[in-house]
Length: 353
Image 1 (cartoon, helix red, strand yellow):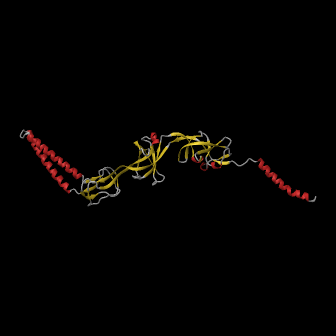
Image 2 (cartoon, helix red, strand yellow; image 1 turned 60 degrees about the vertical axis):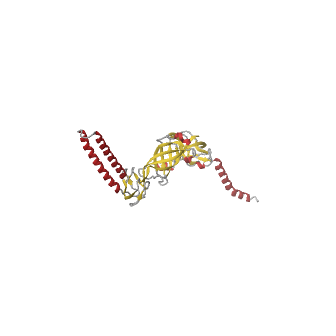
Image 3 (cartoon, helix red, strand yellow; image 1 turned 120 degrees about the vertical axis):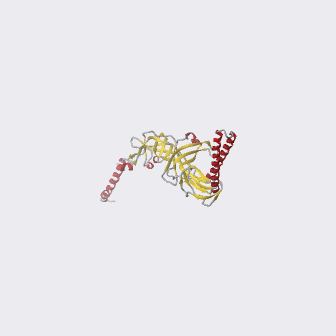
């Protein structure tokens, strides 16, 4: 290269070298990566109720198959499928012409025997007849009254009534049907209250007691829960399943629940205080769980925690945190131990302000 070309080369390389030096200077004097933007939550002690979950079967509060007691022909059916009835309502009339005639005959015989007894009692008071004759007439009068009562009872069996208030199922007879003892007329269920039977492992036996609150849900009514309480804990534990049956009562004023339905049950134990954090703040790796706790210098530290029960969006912390600790909620996936963070208010809180 000639002496006259060297100054020209220096002039071309100088801007490039200055730019490279400037970039190196900026990288060496910078602050590193920008802080991660996160939201935080202060760990607090709050009321907590442990819940035991199970599957249960709904049963009617009272249930019966209405049947005939005698062999007779149906004269009239006084209900339709699915009717609501009150206790004592007449459901079916059976033919009872023979019994009606017998009732009239028995009533007449009783009236005559009673009149004879009244006359002889007056005569006995005047000492006109022996006392033995009055006793015989009294026995005849009482026998006639017993026959009258028996006839009335047989006639009552031909009028089938509802034993309690409830809802009827499908009717199984029509006018003209010949029924016999045991013939099903219809089903009758009292579903104003539902009995919910479910099994609980024997390990929870000490935590069961009448009066505990329960909440039940059904796939038939998404988003709706049915509240009730434990009525009875069975006196025996099943030796095969090692579970005990619990019966809860659920008020059912709208008659939405039906016998035979499958319900998911939550049995709540007495309320206690617990450290609770949002479930999304916990990172679960196999059986290990940890959260990121905020330090005073706006950095985070990874803290292992032992978890307890869970409920909607929250989890109980048994070990690893204390009340007043601040932990990261949103943004945990991009953090590492010692990372610098910038805490912002949650989006919903910012919108509310």
